[in-house]
Amino acid sequence: MTSSDLIRRTAAELADLLTAGEVSSRELTEAHLERVSAVDERIHAYLHVDAEGALAAAADVDRRRAAGESLPAAAGVPIAVKDVLTTKGLPTTCGSRILEGWIPPYDATVVRRLKEAGLPILGKTNMDEFAMGSSTEHSAYGPTRNPWDLERIPGGSGGGSAAAVGSFQAPWAIGTDTGGSIRQPAAVTGTVGTKPTYGGVSRYGLVALASSLDQAGPCTRTVLDAALLHEIIGGHDPMDSTSIADPLPPVVEAARRADVSGMRIGIVRELTGEGFQAGVQQRFDEAVAHLVDAGAEVVEVSCPSFTYALATYYLILPSEASSNLAKFDAMRYGMRVWPEGAPDASAEQVMAATRDAGFGDEVKRRIILGTYALSSGYYDAYYGSAQKVRRLIANEFAAAFTRADVLISPTAPTTAFRFGDKLDDPMAMYLNDIATIPANLAGLPGISVPSGLAPEDGLPTGFQVLAPAMADDRLYAVGAALEARLLAEWAAPLLDGAPDVTSLPMPAAATKEDAR
Ligand code: GLN
Image (cartoon, rainbow, N blue to C red; front, top):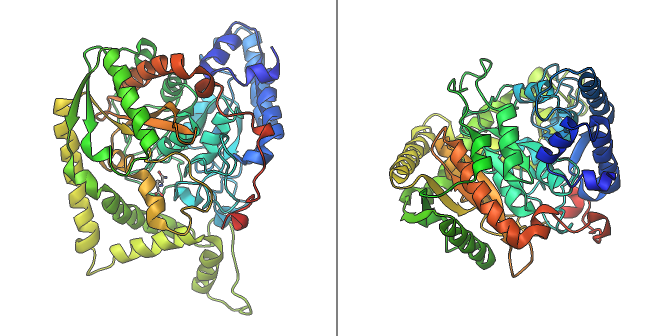
């Protein structure tokens, strides 16, 4: 098998090839590293590639397999990790200058579990600074490009992970989703992304954006791969006080059965129709018809408070972020900037100079918003009110789930937009997450699966499924049922992903500065 065949296989297929002894982890890892060398200059999915570490991990798996050791099912299949999870000995920047050069002394629990499962880590993927954004244009290291069209955004904040998987530079990857950063990039790159139930995957070692919303999860090309990865990283962790002790729902079994017969599927009225691009809505409607054909029953539900989800999120998230980011004080991690011409500067002056130089505009905007929302005199009016609306949203979800087993909507309102289109308009950027944010506010799981290409621009669209807490298995049942039907129709674009990136014209906007 040639290396260009290997990189197009799903993680599940690669795991089978490894188990059957038809390929070694070293060959697989080398094939992906070669692909990175060939195309990442164009895509910029990776911030750091760890060829040496990945090849050493691969050699270790090969040696253990040869010695007859019984290994975890996916041992030897390489993976990429969003640069917001700590990796011992490997840089972790969160897409920010302030953490440039920081090498964590420990692994996040998710990373530890990947290593225990025998997954060689290819590298760390690009992201909007501290996971704030929907396009990766806020990365301090320059944007990632969408493999379908290099002039367009790959979504964000986890555009690096989605683009790595979509351009065959990794069979699968880890992302994080605070308001949609796994699901929206999946939607606009034609890949699969799951945001697990809050507490279902450990947050230990995930550099916090908003602790009550953050959740790490799988970025893959198929629903089964997402379930397999979910199972590897999920489950209770004593190192995370919000980790759920109950066993993980049967996600892999659900993905394999792909059975939606008799399932009640609720279309959320507030998350469809007006404001959604015509082709996105059209592919959504067709997907619904496929699910009905597969035996599901469709109901319409209404959750009026979802209209306030975005406003609620943009009070709660900045509040938590302003507190979480206070630790970047020039004393403990990363960069330190001395104020110019002030050799006797105080610690406070060094902190101010460092934070001024180290944080980008979007991060500063949110720190200011959050500090304001939490300030005495305004706390009840802003943060307090937002928490009350958050409760209303959770209550409306609970009511909707008495009428439906899962809820559905398009994942993102539009297909991938062009660089620069929304960069100077924060509201336009924030609106990308209109359909994904409610699940984060309520702590619920969600998945985005490809629903075909929009007729007007030929770009990927995403279909979102939401489920009650700890019913993540339902996401995979619906996702896999839809995938099976859509693959029949869309086989080439869905599984073979984007056109060959090496042949796409290279855009002029190649750096963050150019994109502005
Ligand atoms: N785009 C959203 C934001 O900017 C979501 C980010 C995320 O999920 N990390 O906050």
